[in-house]
Amino acid sequence: MPPLATLRAFDAAARHLNLRLAAEELNVTHGAVAQQVRALEASLGVALFEREPRGLALTAAGRAFHPQIRRAFALIAGAMAAIEPTQERERRGVTVTVTPSFAARWLIPRLGKFSVIAPDVEVRVLASESTEHLGGHGLPDLAVRLSAPPFERSLDARRLLADDLFPVCSPSIAKTLSSLDDLAGATLLHDAHDAWPLWLELANASTPPTVGRRFNQTALALAAALDGQGVALAPSALVAEDLAGQRLAAPFGTALRAASERAFYLLTPRLSRMRAEVSSFRSWLIDECDAGLDGE
Image (cartoon, rainbow, N blue to C red; front, side, top):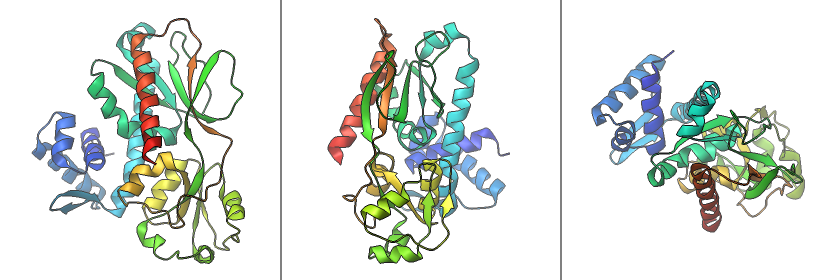
């Protein structure tokens, strides 16, 4: 097991693709981050970054490794939050429970923005698919779930982002997919929602005869897509940054989408009074999602 400090340095460097920014986030020197990353690469026996004149780029191994490390840190944070005394949790900040894929692919990369506007509010992220009660002693303050109405009367539900799916893959694989017929030779990456049959039917495309790969989380399927292992289906919210950074490509465009009745919903208890830090985080979350919609 590599030292935790090396994994923290790798996570920060992978998110920023810049050692200086990673060092500023971790409050250490540029050289310390570089040393920790080199130590991790030596421990694993693989290169995680390619050093470029203007910064860093993840290798294939780094792209496959990073989503799992991000998820691991989210799970650690959730485990710590779960055992903290109730009074301490309430005093120190906000606890939000989100699906693992939303945590890894959307929320965690943006949490730094919230820290800028609310530096004194500690945010605890619990990655979970299960439905929990909200708002009581020792319970999360709010939740983000991939769901559809109706919701419990005790909850206020605010729709954040759509779950309309389209194919994505690495740019190298996208070059081999000039038409839908080329999917016959592609490897399809499935997640637990298994929406490929619906999208193929909408596109009037036949099901590829090749054996696909199956994952229980969308984030895992997208990690495989980033690694060039095949073609995955994903909502725009979870891949927008990778598409903009050309780490992923949409070989058939984004207009043809498998529409879903489900969406990412923000759930909060219908309480007469919401703590200021919870209200602040809720407003920020809504604003970030609305900004993403404006950018599509």
